Image 1 (cartoon, helix red, strand yellow):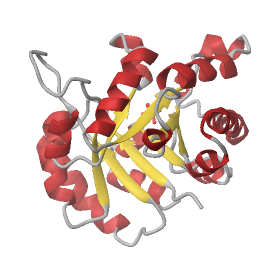
Image 2 (cartoon, protein in one colour):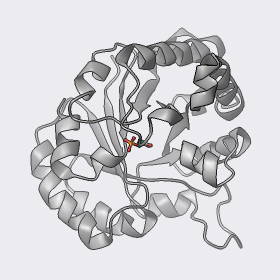
Image 3 (tube, rainbow, N blue to C red):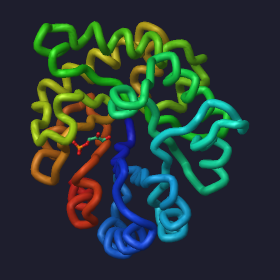
Length: 249
Ligand code: 13P
């Protein structure tokens, strides 16, 4: 049985003071939510405030990206060891916004994923097709390549630590959520890719999250799909009541 993971990606929103205010409202709303793992990924400068505010709760904190080097002359970058030392449990890798605006490739996704694992962080690796790729019937081809080049080169022991997030690019921030059936198709396809490389047990165990315009009013339909193991939520994770209602679907 896969335990759901409900994750919030705050992207480039909130200050440390706003982070503390969020947790003050959010923690009482999810204090009894033992059915799922809960993760919040704020901007780097808010990690200390988030870790402090969430301490003593079951809510985990994660980064939104990391560099693959342990340390070095890489101005502006953050390492896995730094995230771990700051109290992070997890890190998002290969988000489509990183791919689209910051030159992320499947190759750099893989390097970051290995670095996260080496630092003892749980990687949440994002894949997903763009609108034109879906329209031209290439969704599965795109997912297959992202999986093959960005994830499938991990050892089985490494892969066992990974969470996959399926985020169709056309559904991110657009209000146009994938239908539960569309999401389920993609999740089933990704699970079949996992099965092909890592076998039945790994396919049965890996958690695959859906992301893209998840809201309190569409989470239940998504979570009713057996292959959807949680959500990676952007905009709706910024408000404590809204994200709590998603967590408590
Ligand atoms: P929205 O929930 O705002 O569409 O963002 C989804 C996302 O990109 C989460 O990583």
